[in-house]
Amino acid sequence: MRAATGNLDYVDFLAPGVLAQSVLFVAIFYGISVIWERDLGIVPKFLVSPTPRTALVLGKAISAGVRALSQAAIVYLLALVLGVKMQWQLGAIVGVIGLVLLGAALFSTFSLIIACIVKTRERFMGIGQVLTMPLFFASNAIYPTSIMPVWLQWVAHVNPLTYEVDGLRTLMLAGGASVLGLALDFTVLAVTLAILVMIAGWLYPRIAT
Image (cartoon, rainbow, N blue to C red; front, side, top):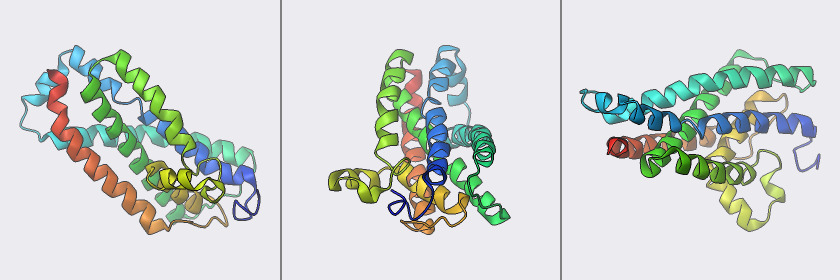
C-alpha cells in the first residue's frame, strides 16, 4: 500500500480524504435549508427581488464554503495531533482554503439542485444519504485510483471529489504530489461549480411552486 500511496504513510495519505469527506458530508445536505426557507415563506421574497437567481445560488454556495472552513481547522488540528507531515507554507494553506471553498460550494449547489427537484425534506434526505457514500467511495479519498478496477477508475475520474482530494493531498502534505495535476484539479472544480450554479439558478424558482 505504501508504494501505491506514493511512499506516503497511510495516515498521511488519508488526512486529505478525511477533510474532503467532512466537507462533502456537510455540503451535500445544505440544500435542505432551501426547503425550510420555502416552508417559512422566505423563498418567494427572494424571488420578487431584482437579484439574479444565479447570485442567490452563488451566495448560498459561498456560505456553505465558509462554514466548511471550520471542518478544515478541525482536521488540521487532528492531523497535527496524529503527527501527519503537513505543509505549513502560506501558499499551500491558501490553496487548501481555496479547494475547501470550491468543494463545499460545488456539493452544496448540487444539493440545492436536488432540493429544487424533489421539494420535500423526506425525499431530499433519502436521496442525499444515497448519494453521499457512492461519491465518497468512488473517489481517491481512502485509496489510490491506481488500485481500483478499470471501471471504477472511470467513475472516479468523473467524480469532482477525486479532484478535490488530489489537490488537497498535494497542498496539505509534505512530499505530497498531484496525480492529476493541480491546475486540472482547480479547473475541474471551478468549471463544474459554474455549470451547477447556472443549472441551480434556472431551477431555483421552481422550489416555490
